[in-house]
Amino acid sequence: MSQTHSKIQRSDAEWKERLTPEQYRVGVKEGTERAFTPGNLNDEHRDGLFHCVGCDTPLWSSEHKFESGTGWPSFWQPVSEDVVATKRDFKMILPRTECHCAVCGLHMGHVFNDGPEPTGMRWCINGVVLKFEPEE
Image (cartoon, rainbow, N blue to C red; front, side):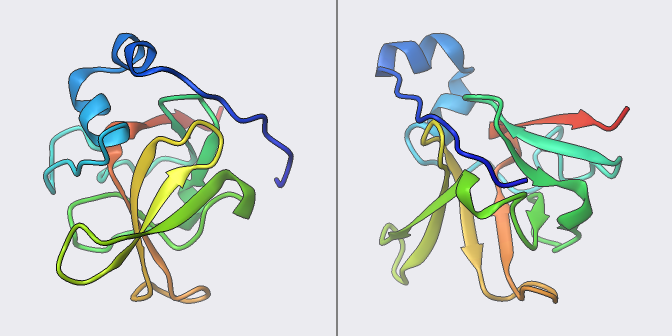
């Protein structure tokens, strides 16, 4: 599923117009939604793809989703390496690896190395910045 994606840049005003206040807080201001927030797609178990709300890029597949017990949708890998970008996050005492949509730059969540095989990774994602599209 690897392909080249054009980068999208939006002004702060454009993001505020396009996103809900919570999507803006989490996606643009790099916040975190509360764990187990109703409707955050943690309990979504149908087959399909999870898209970025900022640009509609497919980022995560239900094939790679697992129950982490954290209260956020968790995946052991993105749909392809070129759709997600990472950077170090020093907002907490210990540094973490933050992940963003590589196309529009919205903050998605964090990635940890305590996930299941085959990757051993846990991409812990804020459901508020995702849009689920079930398989037809």
